Image: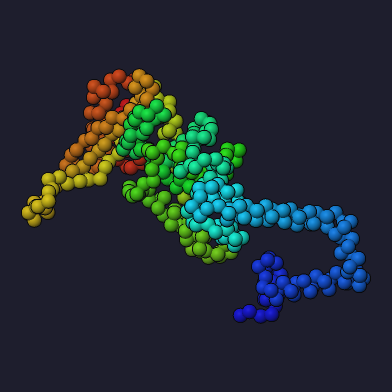
Length: 394
């Protein structure tokens, strides 16, 4: 229920520009009454001194003059913008002068007649620093901007720190026009979040959003499906959502339990980050004498299917277990290479005995005799995190 006391409290903490006309009039009346009382019934003399002799008054007048100058400048740009032909490419060039500091709604409120496409184009030019009135250009010429190599390296490093490597590969075009196969990295965060992290942590770098997207290699992708997820991560994400809905002053048993679980989840993320950094450091430290083996069980599958199947065969198909090994090594030119080995079996137990037998057979392969150092990586499944598997290795 809104009482007169609540209304006064709301007006007290509301910005003057957000008040209603009656609220603004009331505030002006209160200020005048206070001036009369403060000046001893001489408000004119007090205001004359404040505006003409006081430092605070002079600063206020200068601030108002600056705002007026900015408004005049914007209106001049608006007049020039309106004088151009409706389909002129120069319209977005002029609009770029104000698109970086004013929202689309504010620009339209000031009298600019702009479409959503024209504003988006002007915003992109402003972010990239493309201010020109030259000949017609159909697209923003990113080649005219000098992009330093360290900026590219920073973008790639942030992408690597917020992604995980997969067993898939894709073609990536190089600067010389040739294509090479690179591993596909699936991003743990959106590209927009990664861009915001760069802007926040590296404020000295002038990097527009469109330029950031241009610098992102095509082998960094956002996964469409999250399979074989860690149960701690899934529960932790859900608990964070629940915690945001809880009142911070709520001290019930349930809220305390959720806070403890979120705390454990954040510690789990720190361990995950440390392991991810160690894995990437291991890959970066490879030479011609060493390799990395990543092992994991894939999802069981069935074989022998077809577009037309008899019911007896469809329901009697046996499952196949697939234990995969990915070997990562460097060739003579220092480029990372991937070689895959798969062990298919009707054994569905996924136990340490089967994993150790497959690993022993793998290490006896002719391919691994060239390496003196082999680094083994796996998830924390019980079939890999066991003394039996470690004993079989050593």
